[in-house]
Amino acid sequence: MISLKGRIYRAMMYRLSNFNPYHADIISKLKRFSQKLESDSCPDGFIRFEEETKAGTRYERLRNAFEPSGRLLLYFHGGAYIAGLFGTYRKFAPDFSQAADNGETIFLDYRTAPEYQYPVQLNEALDLWKDLIQNQGYDPKNIIIGGDSSGGNLVLALLLKLRDQGETLPRGAFCISPWADMTASGASFKENYGKDIEFGELGEVLTEEKRKLIHHSDIYSWLGDADRFDPYVSPVYAEYHDFPPMMLTAGGDEMLLSDTLTITRKLRQAHVPVICEIQPEMFHIYATMGNAFPESAHSYQHIMQFIYMLYHKPERK
Image (cartoon, rainbow, N blue to C red; front, side, top):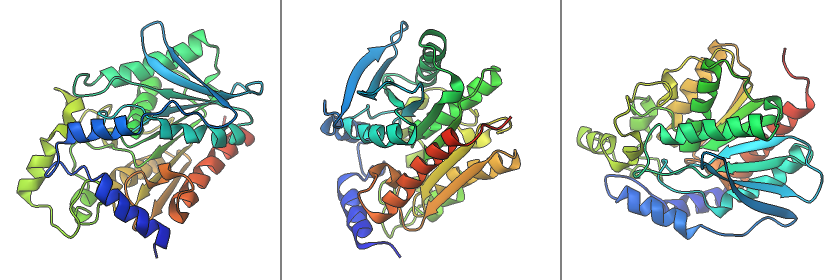
């Protein structure tokens, strides 16, 4: 049963951040949401640097005052590729640093839709990855990639690109409620519509009229003319051989639950070590809320344990 704090956060999220395209101007609402959370704040004991690659890809680097260990968390934020990077993501840095023995955290600040569309964000992720490896001297096996929602989409797309190009992949990766199916064909898209507090309508049924409206709404503005069945766009249509160990989390009540379950099934079919954690009655990207309430704390701490395990166990040959 969901905790009292979990219920309070569910109610708060429904009031403040329901982005159902049937009722909301999705672009302006997401832009306002990210702007409201913009901040120059930095966790105590950490220094923030705003940097960019030679090609102009922007990113933030957070490190503490100790000698860096060479370990790195590369994180891709969510927001339907419409919302920008905002300050609350920086709370990952101290916990990651502890799990990785003074690791650094880098947040890709990709260009957003609708002004910038596919493959801009994927190209920026590739550019940053190559800059980290070729110009900054990071070992891919010391890097863990993570992301939530559209950032989870970008994690999967980048891993697929690197694998398909014959590049060395990172040590591991995690996805929080990845948005991995632009065709919205998973069973949960319809089954959880009346339970999803962020993209659905509580107690309502997804009619064919609503499904078509959502499917052609501005929440997909990042796609441009891209093929929704392209595995780099909808990673549920990809194959997952030769992937690094992964962890995925999702809420049991979210419309995108099927995305996580499909990716997990394909990873297991490819014999990739994978942990999948589904929290009943939880909502989209609940784990990004850290220790705010028991359910988010449970999954967030498991992600940090996954990171610790990857760095402190011998790498697979």
